[in-house]
Image (cartoon, rainbow, N blue to C red; front, side):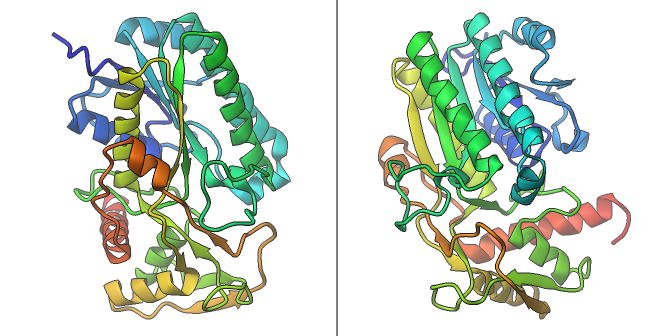
Length: 337
């Protein structure tokens, strides 16, 4: 017998970085889960044995209808999409297609199948360059790139759909996601990833010869950009709790920041990687990148007051240690370390 408080969940993009950690969190908590992923950026090995993996596209309505029927899907966690900000500036239509148009198709399929709960992977990029720090959910959303706009449009579609149909949703706006599963079951596996902690750990292991520091003249304590880094497993746990909240109150939808509410500069992070690895990373100082805010720190008051969320890994050295452990296991898996 399935547990009615744990209805079957479909995770889109479940072979990717954050999606695969959500699958682990759901499985660890006893939820039935299936994955749809087109494997363009995801990895088959990131989906645990025993979890059904449908290789396909979230805009394929016939495939979605089949999955929903086969899995008796009652909730969707939507991670599938494109996430590289500079690429979104160079190729905006790719982002409006992958992130906005395909999300619309997925939402429509959910409505047609009467799936009542939808959790959306949104981003602090919807705030653009906020005038206040830390950033609360009611801070004006003024994206400065197509990536941020593509996600904000999906938030709006969900709000409008929830007003018109029996569906409630939670949009979780991520700050800087980092780290890896503490048991090294998954991690950030993308070649050429742009996440600072991933890049720095690669440099510490000799996979890169330096780390670029973009901008040293920001109005921050050391002149480099300050970000709120959240451990991917704490983020995944927040998704499971958010789904429980949606099930408990079907008439209520939620929008919440996902961060710890404190920031570290680029140099803080590189110093921490040096400390954890006992290797001195070469820093190369370069010009600012267009559209990078000086500081982006979440105000986590709402998520803390709404969910019983207790982060387990809210420590920079711990985040780096788990990222390092995963990077080493990737090297072994790929036979070059």
